[in-house]
Length: 431
Image (cartoon, helix red, strand yellow):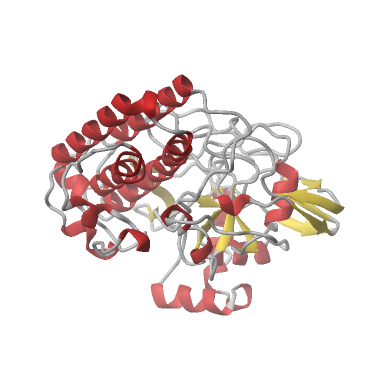
């Protein structure tokens, strides 16, 4: 998601319903502020690694998006809040000119968090004042901007987690919720997938990023998907069996990554006083590991090695999407309000479970354009096509994804070594 798409929405068959879109805009903006409400100015300014950004930057960048592409471009005589700030808060838009280098965002001790909050309020008030006069093109961009901000809400949460994980005090972002009783999941079962010719990709009404289409036919060989996600307990068995020390399980690049970085377990796993992998760090601080919950914060390299160890493989994105079509993408463990964000233990059930929410699921598919893909014109078309190199597709959303943001055709993507997001594993196999 650090490289995730700011892409144009598809053309609508009907005009936007202005009151509903305004309400959605306001609720999305409110959630961003709520996520950062308990952070100090220092918390919101620090940058723990080049892949992450300060919370304050996320709050300002999403406001810059609305100010630039709505107010500047569609509201006559609008004056920028501060003419110096586009340089600070542009992300990757080459068409928008020079910008601060991403690894340097943590140097922005100023503007302060309160000044950024004031910027947000200014932008929201200006959009509300112009709302009834905005053209349809601007409303399309507002819908896009809301989805863009929801992407940054997830990044804000996971970047805070990475930042606080570097602090020896193991600070708590949000108090933990009462734990649900954890029951060991049923043994993994295999659900046969569709075979032969089928279609994938977004082709219906409603919002989608441009990389989700066009809808197109694919051919699926006989295969099956695991009915649930891989758990911490299953992953710990992999660790204890020497999975991270067995070169034959790993891709060549993955094995080099393990050795160069001293990787022994998923990110945020921690040893207890006896040296055992029994604890983990989360937004609710350090605590005991729930062995029945989905494993999270694993890279593509780790996911592929685990699948090899388990005698299986990762699904293709077409296999995953064909299985998810027709399922309710709002049902799952998603981000609804600020809380202790963590995957929940799998509950008993039949058929495919945990397809949406909890953790993003790695696929073995390279992130490439679909047949007939064309990037949108202008600055908002930059983010998808130019990142279609060297990354792998993930599906399903996570516990840090706002509810309603995901769908069966949604294509997230990361580099194979990245694991600071809530990334996990669903196995597949050939039949």
